Length: 174
Length: 121
Image (cartoon, rainbow over all chains, first blue to last red; front, side, top):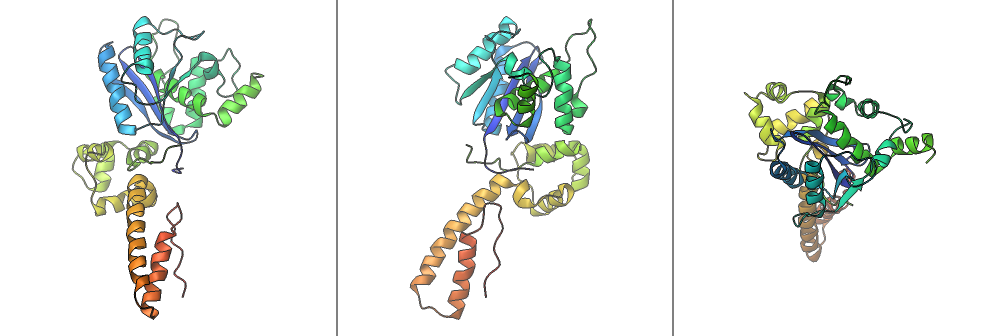
C-alpha cells in the first residue's frame, strides 16, 4: 500500500437514505469506502454524517457532484444538501465539484457508457469493491444504494486523475 | 499536499482482505468484533501483542500499518536524538562517545520509509 505523503480526498455521494463515501490517498490508493445510513431522507442527519467523516479522515479536499452543472439529475433535497456542504458557513476544507462530463471521462467507456458500466470498471480497478457491485438494474427497479459507493469512488478518481482518466480522455477524444 | 498520514490503516487492510470484524477478532484472539471496531475508529489503541498479530495477518510492517503513529514517533525520537547528540558532542570524545554519536546520526538520518542505515564501524 502506498502511504507516501499525498493528498487525502474524501468523495461524497448522498443518496435517498444516507451517504456513500470513498477516501483516497492518491489515485491508486483507496483507503476506505462505504455507505452511512441516515434511515430517512434527512439533510441534517446527512450533514452530521459528513461532518463525522471529515473529522475521522481529516481530508485535504472534499469532492462532490457539481449539482448545478449540465447532466446532473439530483433532487432538490440533495441539491440543497450539496450546496450547504460546499458553500455553508461550516465548510472547513476546500471543496471540488465534479461534473457528469468529468465523471464520464473515467476509463475507456464512450460518452454513452452507463453508470453500471462505470461501476464495473471501478470494481475491476479496485477488486475490494467487487462484493459491493449490485446486480444489474432492470427498468422497473429503483437504484441500489450501493451505487453511491461507486459514484463516490468515481468522483475521487475524476478529481485525482491517473491512468483511468487519461485512458478515458484518449478514448473520448478529449 | 497532506503532511499527515492517518494514525493507522487497520480498517483499510481488513477491508481489502475481505475479513469481517468478527473474523479478524477471532484471528487476533479477541472475543468479539467490538474491539476491532474501537481500534479502527481510533477510539482505542491495540496492545503490542495485537500490533504484532496485525503485522503477521496483513503481512505489512508495523511502520506501514501504523503510518501516522510511526511518523509522530519518528519525529519525537529524532528530536531527542539530536538533543542527546548535542549534549554528547559537548563532552570528551572517546571511542564509546563516537559510537553513540554514530548511532544518533543514523537515527537523525532515517529515511522517510523508516530504514535505518547500518552503523558504520
